[in-house]
Image 1: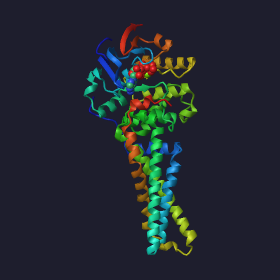
Image 2: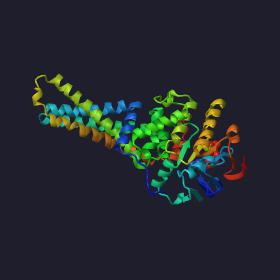
Image 3: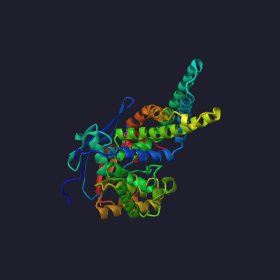
Image 4: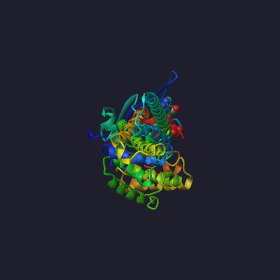
Length: 180
Length: 230
Ligand SMILES: Nc1ncnc2c1ncn2[C@@H]1O[C@H](COP(=O)(O)OP(=O)(O)OP(=O)(O)O)[C@@H](O)[C@H]1O
Ligand SMILES: [Mg+2]
């Protein structure tokens, strides 16, 4: 009619995404799995990667932790999308575009990745303190440690791509028909 | 008053193919809706009421025929423009309210203003005003799960109104309410229609709702059976 379309920016996605994270049961599960993988990574950054044999072993464990976190996150996000089937249909009915729905889900993943990464850093730090009391705080590799956050958000967002795609492609008519 | 129709439906058809057989959900419907009207759509289950609403709201594309809203052929709009239409021109009310469970009453009402591009604070202000209008100013911070069915439907009505639409499509708005609560919802819709001039098209089985409308369109098997002017 005007060639205009509807709006839903990053701030809006954060606002709504935060409500969903706070109001629904799945977020703690996602945050737990992301924080475990992140804790493992942070621990390795702090302790150093170790000697040859230890190195292969630890890298292998880290990859397993990352894969487990990613698969768990993808599953839980997919469940979350199906549980919200009708609500996503309502959003589209009220003017949300496909890409708005996609953005909402990815931002939810981003927030959970950041929280999970933050908890992971604390956990990793705590476990080095327990296993190695002699580490002086000044010797901590803060830069390496902070690389946990990009890693955790990346895992979180990458594993939510498919669930977000499913949410985006959902047909609002079918979703609204979907009786509870 | 009978000038240009706000909505014009011309030879509208929507077929579904199911396991080789064709279901004619709508089959050649011609209708006109005028600004400020209150029209009830009546018909047995499966007669095509929801299908008609989906087509008027641009959620679905017809098999045949046209829908014009304000003179614009919906077939000529892309998905961006259709989203804009649903957001700014049309408000929706559903049988099961369809509020967002994690948002408060106030936030639920303000939600469509985000899509309309309003700043959030402004949206909240408008939402509060509308919740006051529907008599819920003491329930702003309640979640849908903390509201009664009638209160939830009033929140839904406020949400449908928040972007000042020309049209409200209400699909059995009293279907899940007891008689008395339903009555109050009908009264509210009639008041909005009179005071704010919003055009209301409501699918309903409710006798009270039908009695209060300007016209009644009777659908059967995807066709208009009769139109009754009150
Ligand atoms: N996605 C679909 N696939 C196949 N058939 C469909 C589909 N959607 C609707 N129909 C059929 O189209 C017809 C009209 O359905 P519609 O939902 O419009 O009826 P209605 O008048 O809203 O009924 P009710 O009063 O029960 O809500 C029905 O026969 C229905 O089975
Ligand atoms: Mg219906």
